[in-house]
Each structure stands twice: as C-alpha cells, then as structure tokens.
Image (cartoon, rainbow, N blue to C red; front, side, top):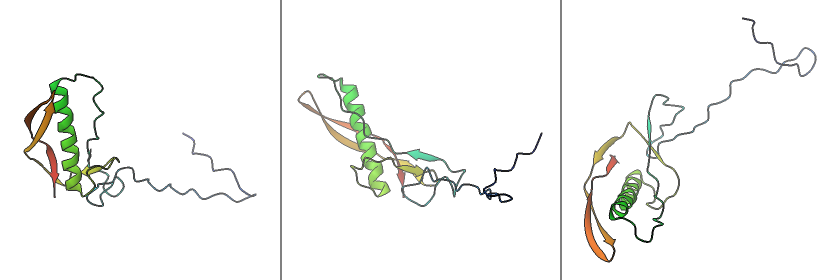
Length: 126
C-alpha cells in the first residue's frame, strides 16, 4: 500500500496544512446540552410530528382516535421539553432522561357524537 500523495502545492515548496474538519452537530437534546458530538454513544428519540389532516369525508373512528392520540403525545412531550405545544420544528430528547407512561383523557367528536378516549402516552420526565 502506497502512502497518500501530498496535496498539490500552493507555491513552489509550500503545502496547505491538513486540518481535520470540525464535526457538525446534527442532533441536540431539547432539554439539555447533549448532542452527537460531545456524547457520541448517546441515543436520541425524535418527538413525534403532527399527523396529516384526515382527507376522507367519512374517516374511520379508529383513524380519528389514532390521530388525536398522536397530537396529544406531541403536545404533552413538547410541554415537558419546555417548548411551545404548537412548535413545528423537529425536536429530539436524549435517553439520559427518564421516560414514563401517563394516563390522559381526551374528548373526541366523531360524527356528531362525543366520546371520551383514554390514552397512555410514553413521555419523558424531568
């Protein structure tokens, strides 16, 4: 195996120094200062995004319940992170925080009828 050739000279007899590029921070915890650069072995969990609106004129009850559950999980997690409930940006939470299951009730309107649905979102805890 031959060694890598030196970079091309700028001027005769002068070479550019080979400097490593600084690592770019791609993931950052919304609660603390952990990121992929200073904690490379740490895993990050993406806060669920808002689901798309239901396009059907007559959506199934199960899809309405599932959509409301995702919205509830997103808002609950964003409250615990300390962000706005309606923030659209992607947020991550590192696994160094504890996660807990909480019980939440939500009033859902389906075809003019009101029903109460119980959810068990798995949210991070301070």
